[in-house]
Length: 305
Image 1 (cartoon, rainbow, N blue to C red):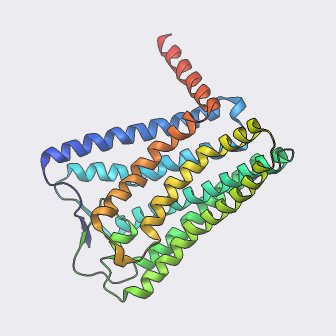
Image 2: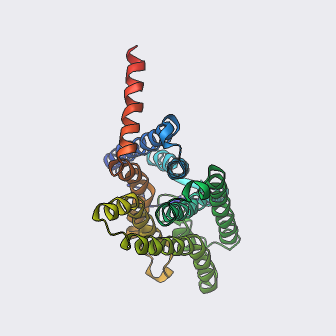
């Protein structure tokens, strides 16, 4: 049993342009996120909980894009854009699992900012490396467990004879359109899983930022307020990008499903968000910019020598 992807362009010229465009973006995603991980490992001053969590987020982004982007590139070049049932389920499980991990990691990073701003004296005692490792591992495990249960549920349902997926890869909304069963109960089940993976972490982030805003407003110095808000601005920008796309895709009824619109949004959170994350965190963070600059300088000097 195989599914066929129907969203790819049929003209050779468009295929060539698509392949070049996606390849370029993928190279930038991988290189940008690897640079962040290497810079955090190489710079001793960045061996703090905030940067450890940022490095973990970049590592998850690398794996997240690797689940679907190479498959998209291969399908662009292949005349028959098919995928087996097992491969589709595996791709969906890891894509949803790592995407959920992203959401939980952003919630952990919000908690880190809350402790840093609201309890600065106790921050090194609370946000230890051991706690950070446990929170990252918990985020990965919870994300993969939720996605495994969701995918097992979806692929236990009967599929119609129509095998065409109006998408570039195996995602929940387009695959659910192929289910030949009473859709209301199944739609509610998927909505519950999406709520656990998206809405719950977002609620934790909103709670953390409500305490952060209350603490910052009690600061009398304008410079102090600006410094406190600037430490959160990068994270908040990434949260809005990530959760905006995810909420649009997964927290809505299937009656509002639009293949073309969903294909565009999926490209935004599959390629756009992982590409922008390194830019947002480096452009708004002088320490990260300096660390990446030193890493690139050392790399160039070592090649010259």
